[in-house]
Amino acid sequence: MRKLFGVLVAVGLVVACVAPAGAQSDKGELKVATSLPAPGFWNGDTPSTLDGGFEFELAADIAKSAGYSGVKYSNVSFDALVAGKAKGFDLALSQVTITTDRAKVVAFTVPYFSSDQGILVKTGTTVDESNVKSIQWGVQTATTAQTFLKKKVKTDKKPRSYQETTQAFAALQAGQVDAVLLDTSIVSAQATESNGEFEVVGQFKTGEEYGGILPKGSKLLKPINKAIKALVADGTIEELRNKWLVPVYSVDPTKVPYIQP
Image 1 (cartoon, rainbow, N blue to C red):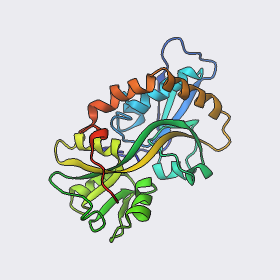
Image 2 (tube, rainbow, N blue to C red):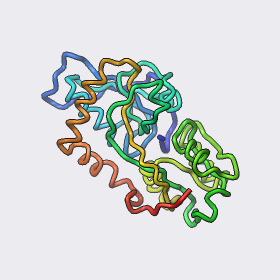
Image 3 (cartoon, one colour):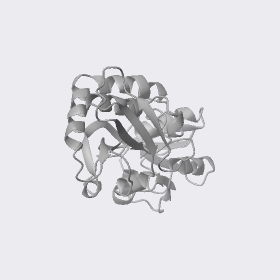
Image 4 (cartoon, rainbow, N blue to C red):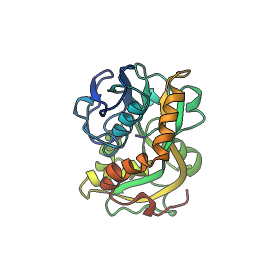
């Protein structure tokens, strides 16, 4: 994954979010990390400017369910997060696809979201089976999109990788790449942010699922999994999706055509 317009801030810049009334407070605040920016999932470019979003509100609901008084947010590097190198958090929610390799260095929660890989281009650009291997792709470093292009699409040109999604989108805008591959939910929100400059023209069926990340061996995994399962069962997560993500999609991800790699 991962994250749209904005400037990455240093790890450790945090802001407290008070849990809804009725939450237990004996555990203090749940420390939640993410990689900003990520409109729709996290609305705001820094922890101090966050004011909503799917994962933002999900974090608060998990904290309340697990007996925390609130949430303290921090911004971390995405590649450090999935490599198990990020520190100082209890739980990370950052549109991270659960994979076997990542699970070797971090602990994943149960899934809370599903996504495929979407193709973002400048409006009017065509990407289909006839040119999917020959165009110049852009990806974010350490994402499943990067792996998919290498192992499944087997592109003629080596994809250009970028540390942050903002850099990949800037490269697309500058014509340095023909298309950017990232989670369909992320590029759909980016197309909306671009005010018509970008569009999502297709997606690859990958059947990915997002999970929260905890440090290996964390004792919080069981209670957080319990909280997520309850939020799925009572419809809360679907309500959050409809509240925060559907309005920012340039097109419903379920209606984006699938193409073969």
